[in-house]
Image (tube, rainbow, N blue to C red):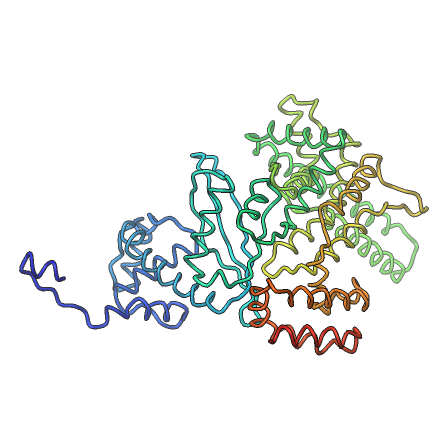
Length: 503
């Protein structure tokens, strides 16, 4: 405005509330009851809507969206360039300020980092997320996702330092951990940054079920490759699978109708009383319901074939489930196109069923550690579940019912569990403050020793950062300690630890 007045002799009226518009909009954006009051707020609400739903900015220029806005709003629909530049920059600045305010009260944080390369343009990307405890709630904040020059540890460390300094100016006084996968550059990145590193448990489960076990059993790798070949052969033959699946359902329906017709014919000539017939029909209905529920339990409801992705172990389970759910349709479709060698045999089906049952135990574990509130104290429980899943299956006569390949698979998983799911001192210390798992994992003597070691580590001369962290967060921890002192018989060590941390 000054430039326009001095150089071009043009005066513009400054809006009296322009300086507070952005903050006012951000305060209102969390409220669903207040609509946009002007074009400024409408454009930024639109940018926030596009970001939250991961839509294309060009969606605002499509005919359907513009027609909707013309009929239902009093504001003009902005162009994609306006939303993606002016409005988006304002939204980012406002949200970043809100995130910085939240992180300003945080004294301990875990950085979750990952890198990948897109298949389209082969650009390397890197993302940084932060997890912390704020007001007794677990928060996960995405701080950055950007293209980088390369995935070397030195290059990524510069990126992480810039992101951390931009969001947390007080980061030098914080206790910072990081969580990454097991790639060598990520491990080196943690060393370069000087952060204590925690392994990504979801990635450890992936390595446990692929590198350490499935990849070492030729029979299973051959069978999985055969499944991949089946999916590749039928990739553009989905209509055949659908047609065969419909025919299969029709045949099953006809079979059920024939069974009921035969049952009715037998009942017509049966001398039994009506009560007996009613009892028998009720029993038949119960048997039918039980068989239907059993078939539903073994089916995942897949209508299409799912391809395996080498970086996700659960994609192997999804592929197996889809093939087993459509096995008869798949075999008929393969015969139609002349791929008789890829048809699944009964032995293949049996092994795939066993493999699905075994891998199904790990599906819930991966979902558990991938949810929004994971905790290190889960690791001992995961180990227990893994050990239980690796027990041999027995039939009604007490004999082992596992095939030789599945027996070897369970042995390999068992032998690699200690290497992948590590129960470190940090994990044990976390269990000390988690009443849900402490008594099942540690004895009172072990808890006492762990707390004493933590007390000695915190009272060392070079532990200023730990004192800052502890002094800020022990207000939460001390309540748990004081409530459990009598149960754990650690009164002395807990009081020492609490006194030192409060100091």
